[in-house]
Length: 155
Ligand code: CA2
Image (tube, rainbow, N blue to C red):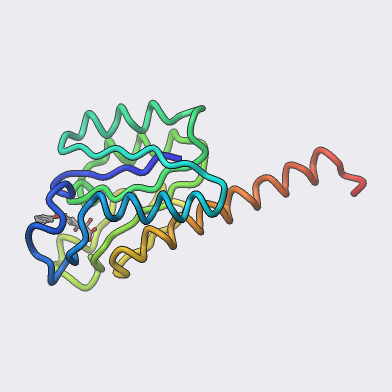
């Protein structure tokens, strides 16, 4: 699965710890990778400050990655190109935010990613990544069970 981070999240741990915590991006990737390992999944982590690079990463995940966990940073609130790219991805998409954008400035209350995400986890800090991986694993497990039922309808 693809774990994607947007702009400025490479600076985590360096500033605004009261909002985003003291953990670094590497810490969150380690949390997600450990949780994924427990579920038999592997994590491919990418971060970019450039919208086009995030789009390329999403396109590159098509047909190759089972799911996407994405914290789009401030692109969450206006990058419709991310919305369109994620809409073209065939698999669970979990939107993660360290803070709770709905409890912050009004401009953070809109997510253009949320309408194309399977679900959103926000406000739980680094725990959100573990919760996101558990959600992905559950979604993928449910898909697998459904396919088995279709493939073997007599069982
Ligand atoms: O809460 C989140 O995870 C956000 O996606 C973080 C974004 C923010 O624009 C979203 O509204 C919510 C910003 C990340 C910026 O991170 C920094 C970390 C350290 C220093 C400066 C910025």
